Image (cartoon, rainbow, N blue to C red; front, side, top):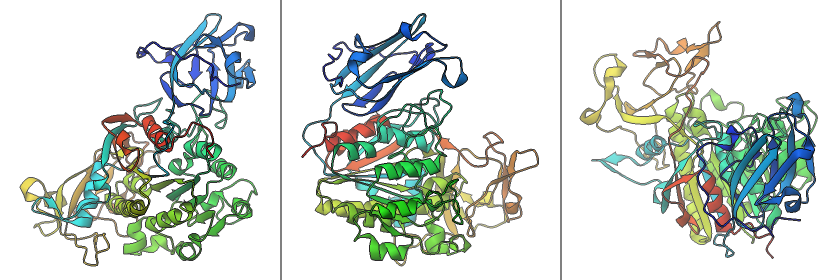
Length: 584
């Protein structure tokens, strides 16, 4: 029996100043949670000590929980040897929209939370939704991409990015339940579930359970679509497919490093398209390069389930678009930066020399998914913006941003003939990165710091794109953008792009502390920069700055002002009119 008969509270909820977790009782979903009608979740109550189950009272809008949900509850007298009790009810929902108050007591243990349950419009606006995630995408990444790709003359850009002309824009807050700072797991999880979570968590509330796979689940967008519609689901990333952002579309774990388990979760839900890196977690441990600790062969299992397997760009081009279900695995780990792969052609890509571009993966995913007359949801991640930004390698991050933008252009072209497509472009979190001017090698002397131009001495960089591919022909031009990060470990600032491989700013010393990597010390003009983050950190960290989101298409009008990251989930489910059950 579902909660459709519950009478929602009619009074306005008063904002809670002290979080519910300050009580002796922790309740999940947490206070101020917003939930889709019919969306599944696990309900959990954690008491601060062992309690008598006969004393436990849980009421939802004044009704005993047993009258609300017919799923069997589990009372745990002593959870994980912590001398504290818990009660769990798995896979429940609420089907009537409104405001709800949950009150819990057991003797002197008391707690309460308030929830808001919302209903999507009955009329579906969008047939398709394409969500682009530039992992770590910040304003400076976009500015650098525009300057380097399009050029700038007398203060005006010579062209616009595809992202620039998306019609609606908002700021997004990215903080997690346990910290003002966040990672890709809980931020992307907020987009995919509409619930907040903690750092490193995917599709779960962070409870005190010791088992990373035993925390209260939040149904993900991918699961919701597969459970309640006939739509297709696609996941594209140039990271490992098990990495936080792509994993969040379908996964549930407190520990984002549970990558082998995440592959099994992919298999359980079976998205129609999976393209990216991370084959090491699909292969049995007997296969060289595998990172599994068992003999499960998920490559074979997906193939047996009807998936076409492709492993390089040539196979993707020849076989990808004709598939009905497609699994593309192009690297055992994360795929390589576009700067190395397409332009520098250095030793970085020797092991996997034929990796597809994000643009090629995006186009192929659209070709496959658009065969479904019921529509699709596609998530495309440009993951390497973040993975280059962590080690302060802004040039690679900027090239990866250009690649993201060119992928967005492909989606916009698709939307020209499929105007019922909602396109959303954002990131999961930001990096502390800014452009301050230029670096001019032709200025006299060897002091690179004095070659940095600011204000009127900056002028303009001399990147060129003679072949018209949208990328600078050279990254190591004589007058470059001067880009710096606001947080960093000890490192040697060289003021130059790294042509052999990604920058490695810091390495460990004998004390286990990270110190400046001496291989850059003797580069002419290199400057030692003393770090401003803890010495146990080897790269830059995420910033708490607001994220920008832009969108076009049916439902994009909901993007405006300031939004919490959980609200992006509602934008998507509203546009697709989910929450009404399977529609014929």
